Length: 543
Image 1 (cartoon, helix red, strand yellow):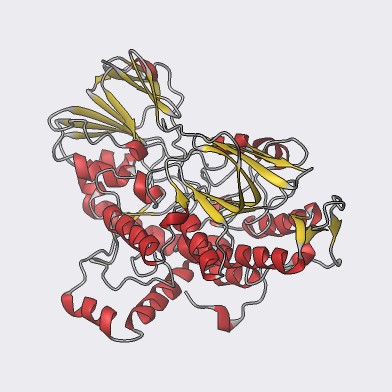
Image 2 (image 1 turned 120 degrees about the vertical axis):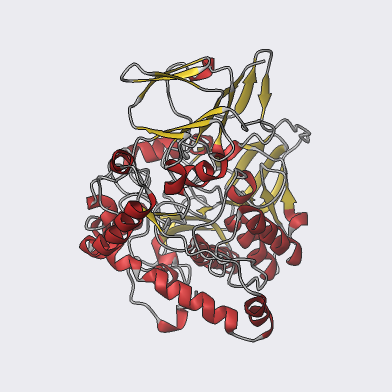
């Protein structure tokens, strides 16, 4: 029986097997004051924050069967984090038991699960709940949410749908005709037998550089299809010694000091990435030296040498990727793929290579997520249509004009190219939690970011991004939307983002009173929104 990959299902010869098949919907919508969609680091962190505030009327809708998000879903061989363990964790739930300096997928997933259990929020989760739509009802000032587990209404919705959750499948002629094993790296088929087989991997991003070294020694032959060569830096990974682990656990301040040192070192990269790209030349020299030492074949070395400035695309870290490419049973193919046949791949030069299995490591829908089409704002337009008009813009990555009473974790321009996303997530959690507290304290019916505040914020963002390596480094990346704007990354030090999200700035929002007769949003006291790069308060720089 053949298998094919689609965006949301596995297709066999006889049927379509949906990813989420649970359907035990109640007949009437259930009302919840606050609904959080998604329970990765972001959604789970907010759930814990709401509980700490004493809130009980909230619910987390998670389409998977457990917390964890991308760390639950990405179980491919070699999956690991590229941010040091002590920084890639919640500041309020430090883990002294990390086994090594860069944690692997299973250990990170276990950590996330342990935090959910420790803070006792699992009873606020509805798992295997795939949200299929969210629509604003202006008459009731509520969100109407549909899912495979029933319908809901909510006063406030927080989207915690991560950027790396919707696999991006390549549009290649004949891909559905392939009769061997085929799957996306984020939907790894652990039942597939790759040992002794001819395997092709499409893509050379963060997942591929971990997968290739993990499977190359056990497959008969591996063809790696490369469109763009990545820049690689050394991975300074090692197991923690017993004395280190004991110190982290029993000596006060040791782990926080380690975390602070890692944070400070990582922040220095911002100067080259976002402000003075010429400073990235030192990283390029290090990467080129690594390339010369680890690949013997001059022709292969030429193929995998990037033709853009380091940092323009995501910088990757690995000690075994280049040696894996240098193996006799591995070929790097740079010719474009013309078509895929039932048992082979044909490249643009007419060469046909037979394969038994195909692994698609082509990343995710980041600036064009299919979930955008399911969220309908106050004027009847979907989030996708709004982004199609103005680009993927938001305010502090946490609110978007036209979507009242809706907040976003990991929204536009919150991404990073150098350090831990958990730091940014915690900044947003504090901002959104303060927004919800403000709504309750003032008895507000609706809050919606003013379009002019959002526009001003994005003008400043794009101005700062203009000089960054992401915009000037000579590459095409998933950081850019179809308008050519970098709508993914934060262009400054992360402590400055922490500073501007320290409190909810209601002056940037339209609000309406809780009186049901008052349905017209009016601006609060006029004031300019806080600038993108507010001066940093030393007291808030706590990684």
